[in-house]
Length: 363
Image 1: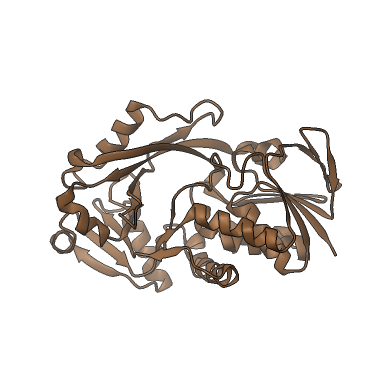
Image 2: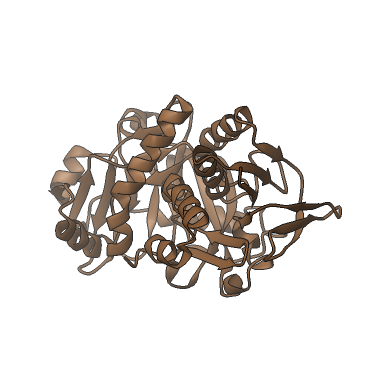
């Protein structure tokens, strides 16, 4: 039975382990922290999945991403996807939502189009002054990230996968050997590194990638808007160049406010504490977008880090018996199950270059 060692237990590492186990491989997973690691880019309450993409290559891969998640749900015996629909708003001609509308039209994706007044009538908690139009898809919603990681780890353990928590890897070689920080050596037919912001430590081609710091806020709306926000879709863009995205209320979870334009390079070792300026900046970006934003209650501010690659393209590089993957760049989780299947295909068939181009949305 062929064997693989996987370094990193985020969504890419665990989904690669899932795909290889299904293909008959023996697998061990090494994680520097716990399962799941609270400092991993993958760990959070939830993440967006949506058809909206201004990049035609990634838009073309979204249907396959949904299919891969369906395969995973069948194996896990439960779904951790909450379909809520997805909203994108255009304020300025040529903004991200306007570009994305053209891609959706070209690919034949279904969406509803609303004028500003129609958007305000349907979602009265939104400020719609200056809105050119809104787009709404029926598909898209929330992937419940931490439950996915926990169930994946349990599924793997039940099938004999060795999960080595709190085991930091110091080095990886092209001969299929890794050495831990404690000096222990392990060998296999293939070593796969899926280590997120630490990827550059193990792969020379990823030296051009860098860690980016992102602040998200978990908030509760004022009581008079709770019902509206409980029935609302997720949003991927609210127009202009702010890159505002997030999730409405769901179950016991608060709303999640993201501000994509407020990300910057940072040090994951020293900059994980949100500052008052972080909080005010994110909240301030929603003034004029959500009604009564000043009455929202902050439940938690959270700082995470993810790996950004040139042109935001997924990375897959092979050096002998070492395969390095980073499907991140701020949009990796939604492709997680598909990435696992892709990486497993590269391991099994050796067609790494072809798979890498496909993962990067180039074919």
